[in-house]
Image (tube, rainbow, N blue to C red; front, side, top):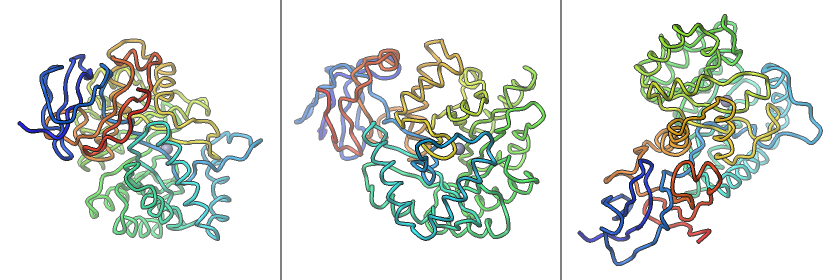
Length: 389
Ligand SMILES: [Zn+2]
């Protein structure tokens, strides 16, 4: 076989030492280390080879809105109301919103993130201002970051918002975003979002149960209406961990049978809220992705955008002290996110996109414990960097 390129001497997530052959923009073959050859060969130095860092959930329209000295909000509704002030100002200067977005995307790119699922609010306060800025930012950032746009009903689902979401869907939105906790009538909110997603043939992403109380448990409602929507993503699911153990187990099985991906983010910790029981989801074989969520914005002023730091914080907060959990969550921040954003296979396999990063560390634990420099990134068959060699 003639290949364009062989990336030799890497380790895969399952521990195998391998060579990866590339033809065009695809992985052509994966064999044991030293077994493949091509006119061009790059040495991977034995490093762990994974899909690139993929941030599965970031509120791109909000990132970078924090001002020095600001007091973090105490509640979700306080945060939404502060953001409304930002939106009203942005309506007269949408260019500024685009600039902020591009800044954030460039910062993520510098930290090694190559795939991003970006949320923008669609609401009566600023209409499609954030969505249009995201379209322009995506154009400007080009191939440096593969970016999906979620048109998100953060401020609630009115008839006008439903119309705006449908407009966004016809103009380049990739996902419809909903929330269980922003409307008096969550059933109407979820049903409307499901119907918009189904009509537009787009995936649905739902912020689920941010109050994190036993009584406020809307996950069953979301699954009742949305379980058949292809590409369902559930963000946070904070009330699940407050249920009795048998109830948790039952709804974890339901998430699994719906084929939904769950996204964890550490932003909620600042509100004193617990994460979803991450270890249980991973034990059940549910795909768990990782997102920055709020990045230096008026909701949460913290966050570095360094996705491996977020992975480590999730591990601390969710007490993920087993090696198999660590490996699964690292896959969540790479392969699972890559699949969400691009539709490509989460793991490296022949026929799948030749898009991946090689880290300095040779194993998941080596990378998580600090050998986390990215040596090489290949995007669609193009070797884009060979840093740290
Ligand atoms: Zn969010």
